[in-house]
Length: 190
Image (cartoon, rainbow, N blue to C red; front, side, top):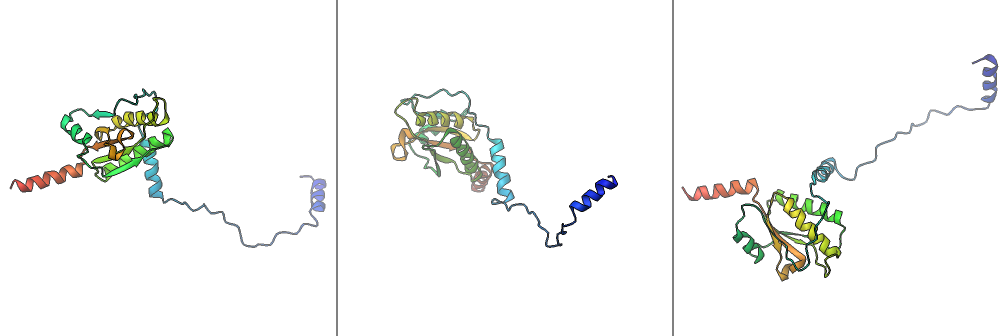
């Protein structure tokens, strides 16, 4: 800076009073409403969601939902369809957007598996028209349930549990349940 510029600057700043050294302002991170562990679990569930939303072949309204995994006996599906396995938990997907249903169903199945639940009820609704929102959700539910390894079978529910607007789902035994079962039967054979 030249002397002339320096003089000009000093004249411009002659009436400026320096700020006093008061308390300094600290900028803190906002407190998280959700603890870190819960956030990590939520992110893990969201990242692992493998349920597809691609091409969907609509299931006609008059065709009942029914699925039996490979190696599952017909008797399991028959007992399921007659309500012999009472639901241990239920999920209501009525009047929700497709993506919300996808996320909710994924979380529900993962949570049921963690809690070693075997029999579930999913209420998806049933429309009068093949193109209705309820039938689209119903068709997606059938597609998504078949994508889970844990799902052994599913079928339409009895009228008391929702009829054509709901389905029973049975899950495979968890590793812990298998170990408990083995231990219980091994004790009896001694």
